[in-house]
Length: 368
Image (cartoon, rainbow, N blue to C red; front, side, top):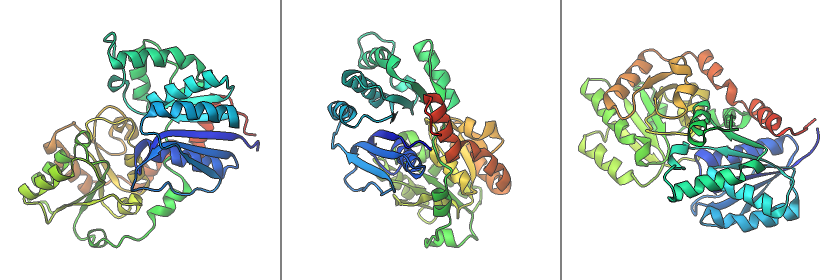
């Protein structure tokens, strides 16, 4: 196999979403023998980027994405990598601009991770309109433009009129993930399986819809259904969510234990995974839960859940911001869990080798 010099770039590191997906990509590429640089704009102060064999981590300590531009120009001139994998629209634009300024011949793949309706605007001279013009002006330099869901590709075509974007999923299914799912859990709620357990995970923020999920837990209680709910994660909505739990008298049924280093072992020991988001790019955490054998219930939000769940074939889809429907979905999932072989079928497109092969084909990279 030809050994390539590859840079994987992300604006920040956190134990969620885009940063975690980029770390996984870097680790997978290094495991295949490539020389990999993981370039990170900034790292949350309470976190440390995990080691991965063969991955050199470079944290630039740049609070804003635009601050990464000059270091990226210097990196491209000095290291001359064969390929760059960038993620998130603003960073993609600065990576492409850096390659133009550096006169680099590196092959670049820019991945979009959130709906373009939140990033760009057709309203002239607004910030989002300026960002759209800038993105359009440097797009020619990209060898591949990708989105993490097919629905998002359609959104980019709508916003830009035409698009070169192609769908490439994030890596979720990999040997390390399966090994982490088998680790023991000491939390009593996950050890005592006599009470049905629903788990959720993500940043505690309004758009995640955890208030709807807590309301659904109250509805299930009022129906006489004994269910426990654990929401893993941290964020700005913690105080409001804890107040909601207290006001609803759910302290004995709902817990928010905070951020955990290995959510997969919790998924593997729960009955149902609930995704209550109002919007997503493509929810990696939903795929992770399915990988762990957890029956999924997800809001039919843009974009990703309907695609991941095969329109309802691999899990239960419910309307957005509808606690009653969410409660119904959780009850249905507990009564009629999805068979393990169906969940395994659903996660096949997120397998490590399949995702890397797709990336290399789009970039026309020879890894033979």
